[in-house]
Length: 63
Figure (cartoon, rainbow, N blue to C red):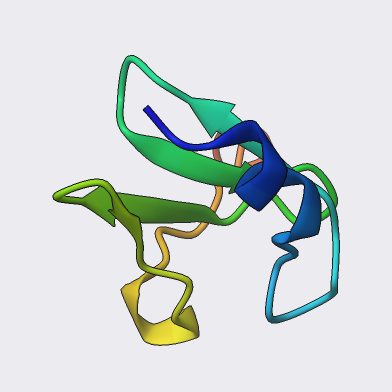
């Protein structure tokens, strides 16, 4: 579990967007850009290189 006070001060390093906690998948998700940052051993890994990019829903619609 991530401390609520920590969640309040964390922001996405890319766009400074607010972060929400996905407890089930142990990820922090930027509400602005959708990047998903992993949590390992209870420590948020807020590095751009470690983030998962959001799924692109429109890719299949362009064909």
